[in-house]
Image (cartoon, rainbow, N blue to C red; front, side, top):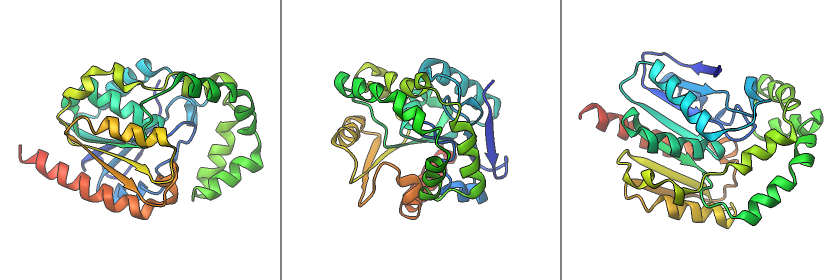
Length: 251
């Protein structure tokens, strides 16, 4: 069963928010859009009520497509960060007719075997650190989470095992193997921070090979910019989403 949270009026245009690995409230800085949109936040594997679940891309995509269809909307928008960004790319590539627009924030799509191996080798220590209450609470504060959001992350992070953490990286999307993406005509926007690693910037270039995908670099931002640079990001999102929805409604 796929759990999800909802914010805003269901009668408004819907946006599916796909959080980053292990961070259910990645979009805490974007929940303010609930005054104009209906926001749906699924609990993806490794976070929230699905914290103990191992991430399986194909299963996740199928569950999300079922959820989207259950909303009974002609089209929705999707915004994903990091792991959620990879999933958003897969969703819009598989069934583009379901979407008004798609936004990919720091979606890593050019995995290198050595890099994947390195991250996977850290999974034991990384999972152990997620069980340290003081560290998770510090992270929540740094990310501008509310106390409730921080406490929730502290609770569910205890369920993240090395196997769950490893799955975040072991199943990284390789865009070169997703040929459907190049055929997508849905308006898309890909953003990464100027302080992110070179692989993330390369991913931006690869995503831009589809002419319907705009790309932007958020100056002075690191990988966690949805939480840390929300004001700058929200201006970009507001302009892009509004334009896309208005255009689609006239079609």
